[in-house]
Every structure is written in C-alpha cells, then in structure tokens.
Length: 271
Image 1 (tube, rainbow, N blue to C red):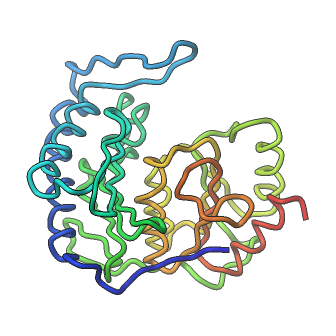
Image 2 (image 1 turned 45 degrees about the vertical axis):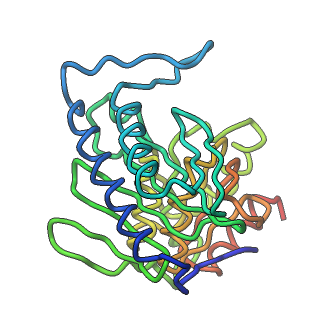
Image 3 (image 1 turned 120 degrees about the vertical axis):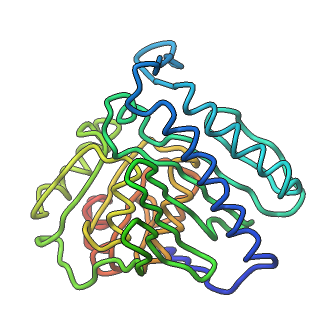
C-alpha cells in the first residue's frame, strides 16, 4: 500500500506553489466566463455516447499552458484537452481544466479545476479549485489547506471511522464494468451513507474531513493526480483497488485513514 505525502520542499518549491496558484487564478477567470451562461455551447468528444467538452474547458487549459510556457518551460505537461508535452526537468504538470463538465453544463457547483504536479515517483503537489464557491484545496510541499472566503484552514482527513460509520462517495452509480460495480457494491452495502455525483469535489470533502471514502473506476491521470496529492497531504490514503499507486488512473480508493482503507480494500478485492 502506498501513502506518499511529501513535505520536504523540492528545489524551487516556493516558486512552484506560486505558479500553481497563478494557474488556478487563470482557470477561474476562464471558467467563470461561461459557467451558468446562456452562451455555453457544449460539444461531444465521443464517437459513441456523450463525452462533453466546452470552450471553457479549452480556454482554461490554454490559459494554464501559457503560464507554464512562460514560467516553467522545462516542465512537462499532461492536459485533458491538449495532450502531452514532454519536459526536461523531471516534473510534470497534470491538468484537468474542468473536472465535471457535465456538472458545469448543468449549473451545479461540484465541478473543479485540477492542477497536479508529478515527479518521477508520482504526485508531490496538487490543487483542487472550485471557482464558483471560491474554495481552493491545496496539498503537498508542506501544505494541507483550504483557502476560501472565510479564510485559510488546515485540511485534515477524518480519523477513527469504521466502515459501518463511513460516508462513501462516487460519481456514477454504475461504477465501471459489471465486475467493478459488484466490487463497489460489496463496500457500499456496509457503509452508513452513499452519495453520488460530485466528481473531484468528493476528494476535496474527504480531505476536509466531511467524507470518509471515495471509490471510482475508469479514471485518467488528469482526473486523479491533484486529488491524490491533496488527500494524502491531509492524512488520507489513496491507492487503486489492489493497493497499488493510483496516479496512473483506472480504479481509485481514497480513505480518510489507513484502517478504513484496509477495510474497504479487502472488500474490493473480494477477501
């Protein structure tokens, strides 16, 4: 099981953090221009089904990439809308310009902007930003904090909660394949409360101590790198459903404590 929470500053950590906040500020500006706007015109990226993208997604990522080109040109970039740009520094920014585009389309404030940073081993820093609510959840490089209109508060995942007492969140009730849904159901049948549909905001609530478990499947790296960094900085645990590092995407199990993670992992694995 992996629960990496790097608190030792890497070289240039203060500048990295400053740049990350500039990325989040730029993405706020671009996304809020079209949130709840009649000018919003979603496109469908999928050849079958519905995978929406909007000009807000594209403009948000373009704005962040422009800042990185100017201020961190040696770093790599992985972004949902504009793909991979190789770097030379050993650090890679992982960007989801709007995580939860369906919520964005519906006017629901559960979407977010995800800004993660990987080194060779995985996530070292992340921001989960909710522009409409003015909530910024930050984790890694010595920080675990929520910055909001009410001020700055420490992020701390909830401890001492058993599976029977836990609140579990996932985005889609279907939760992946039929086998993955069956594994999820083994856990959901044992918890106190299950809620759906918050995308990245569920991980932010876990880091803030309001949610105990987030279990998902079918995710991409840009969906998970920033949430992993934030949850781990807050004292939580994130792996895939086999207890391995999860920053490559796929299945995700996030828990507020090692004990709760072990309970949920055993059920997901069918033990």
